[in-house]
Length: 377
Image 1 (cartoon, rainbow, N blue to C red):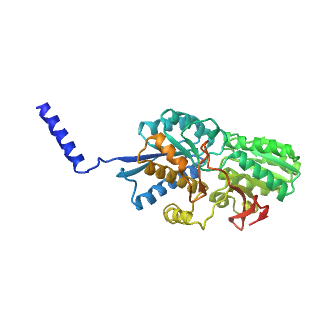
Image 2 (cartoon, helix red, strand yellow; image 1 turned 45 degrees about the vertical axis):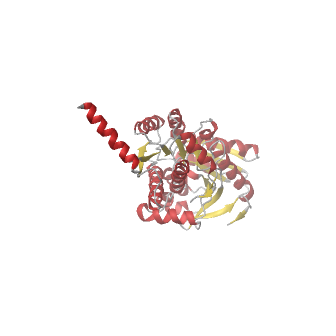
Image 3 (tube, rainbow, N blue to C red; image 1 turned 90 degrees about the horizontal axis):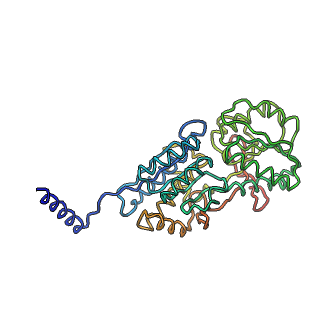
C-alpha cells in the first residue's frame, strides 16, 4: 500500500512538471531595526521602506519563479545582543536576504552571524566605516560612510562658517562616538581648536551640565553627534533655553521629521549632514506616492531602505535565483537611479556617499550648502 501511495505521488509530481506548473515559492526578506524604544521611529522607517518596495515590485508583476514576496521585520532595539538574536531568528525563518540594521552597533555583530549562513545583508542606515571594511562577502551598504560625513562637516565648518573652535558631544554608540572621534581628529589637524569633547548616556534627558560647559567655552560650532533625533531635539531645546549662540551642526541620525516636531522653533537654524536626495526624480516620486499615503512623511532612512530592498529584488530577478553568489554578482552589476541616489556598488559593498549640508528653516528641512561647489542651494 505504501509503495502504491509513493508511486501515485511521484506520478502526480511528474504530471504537474509536465504541464508547466511551478511549485509555490516565497521570497523572504528580513528587516532589522529598532521597532521599540527611543530609536523606534528610525527602525519603523526601515521596515516601512522595505514593505513599500515589495508593494511596488508586486504591482509591477512580481518576480518570476516566486508566487509571493514576504517581509519579516525583527526588532533589534539597537542592542548588540538582541541584534544577534534577531539575526539567528531570521536564519531560522529561512530568509533569503536582509535589509538592516539601523545602529552600526547592531549591524556589526548581526552581519557576522548572517555571513556565516551566506545571507546577503544591505544596510540602509549604518554608516560606521567598519561595516564594509571587514571583508564580509555578502555585506552591502546603501547609505554613506562616517569618514565621508565627517569630512563634509569639517569642510562646512572651515569654508562656510569660518570656524576657529568647536565643542563636540556624542552619546557613546559605535556610530555616534566613532563619528565624533573622527570629527575631533580631522578638526584638530585642520587647525580648529577643540574646546571639549563630552559624552552623554543613551536615554539621558537632562544635558544641563554639559551644555553649561559649552556655553562657558563659547565655541564657534557646537557639534552634536547623537544616535537619534529625539535626543537631539531635547538637546536643542535645552541649548536654546541656556542661550547658547554657537552654530549647531548635527549629523544624519538627528535628521528626521520628529526632530522638528519635538524641538519646534528650537530646531530652526540647525545644520545637518545628510545625503543629497532629489525629490523630483522619477524613482523618488514613485517611492513617495506609495509610501506617504500609508506611512506618512518618509523618515531619514525610509528611502534608503526602499532602495535596499529594491536592489535586492532586482538582483534576485536578474539572477533567477536566491543563490547568494549569483545574487551578489547581479548586485555588483546594478547601475541605475534609485529613489535616493544613483546605485552602483563598489567592490567593498559601499554604494558611495553624497553628503550635503541641510538646514532647518521655518520648520522645514531645506538643502542649504553644496560641498562640491561651495555654494548655497
